[in-house]
Image 1: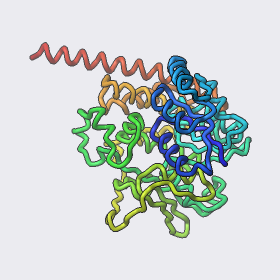
Image 2 (image 1 turned 180 degrees about the horizontal axis):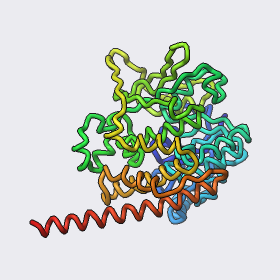
Image 3 (image 1 turned 45 degrees about the vertical axis):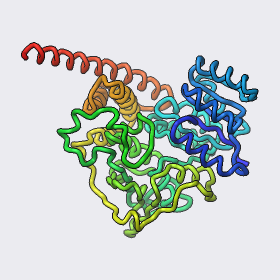
Image 4 (image 1 turned 120 degrees about the horizontal axis):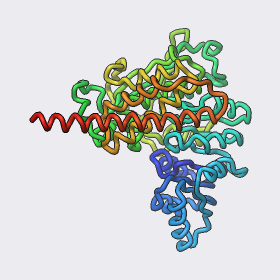
Length: 406
């Protein structure tokens, strides 16, 4: 019986994880569930899975959940705050941690799981983007098992040779081919992207995801973050990671070897497949995903990414090559810019402008510890807010001036 903590149980990855777990009650037991503020869904999950702990980031939400659990006579202990997230990630009785908290908020609890030597199912790419060397050092030092859950990195993991140790040359790996759906705008003329709404950006053609990651997919920043993640997971340089736009999302990624062989992992676009692989590794279990019908798929297309249409992807490659705190700056500026876009403060095309401005303005410092990353994150967020404020004021001034001319 494998005992599990799920960080971010109310998100799309968390709910998919619980769906797989529910199919195998003889194999998995939920010890802790965590969420940001979604009391209703977390309460329902506690009713069904009866975890020992439930954690909410906000204390007010925790008070609400505690009252509802008491009324339902459920014994789940409710905690709150970042320290509580770290606590349930490192519990002695926990075997595996699903790290599915979106964004920088997942960094510290996932790092706590690594330091505690847990099996980590990594669905939070920002952990490696922000603090790749710190996190990987913790994994190696503790002997933690790290299994990537992003469909692309999970595919690469499956296509690499058994015992792969992060050295491509030793294992005959020439390059990694990281597939991308291209999001909802891969065929849209650049001129049409000026008026993109949050609703349009969140309407992914293949995957059901949260709003932030959906926007990242629309800008292809999600793929840029995955390039950085692949560097840390597999030891490949920026030049040896190629993004391939594959609109059908059937081939999840590929590995090319020096002998000319290219191995790919295929499947329906359903996150339960990589989740089931991670939960059961090194065995395989039923995930509830339908079999892939190749006759129905019929055609697979591949296109080179358009860096003019998707400058966020180019910015990610630049940050990876710069190394140090540059990826943390990239991530923080992107999170702030995406939030502003979703709040309709800035336009879709302003997102890469904010990120580029932050990367240009801030120095690249060496990362030797977690504080280096956290300090860069804080500084970048403040700067990004200032950049956005100027953009908003500038747009308002332009609107007023244009109205006066009329």
